[in-house]
Length: 226
Image (tube, rainbow, N blue to C red):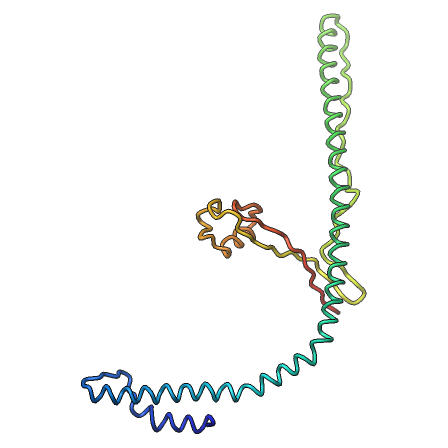
């Protein structure tokens, strides 16, 4: 039975007998309402069957379209995945190298600063001794000039930028996060039951560590042409 026939049946056999509030006052009405209920359920089931039958050709057509595109789409996505992995691997390598050089430079500067600071202390102590001697002998006190502290040096390396500009594209390295509850009792009470939505909001606000939650960064790329 098609849709128009079912609509006509519902309008003639069902809806005229259904009012906003159905009240049954005697056994005869109960029997009539039982019959009407059966008619309504039958029409509803028929409509559902007709809907599925009417929709099935479209589902079959949609599947045929998917099947036609899927092989090439899968090949392209496989290649995209390989390129994506290569870009992220190189980015991580460059960042690790730059971070290591920056850390080494910071350590070397700290060592130089400590050595210069210690030398200044020695020079000041020598000046104090010499000033005391001059006060006793009457000699003119000429202080030893203090050695200057080293100035911060320009960074020998910089972390790679998050945007890679090609000849006709721009790829940004972005980061999403995976949240895993490792200890529900350790999660702060204002983030419970634990509530992942609240946990994500707390993390995005700048809180890097949340008790009871393992937060794992997941770098990914976003590319646009033109």
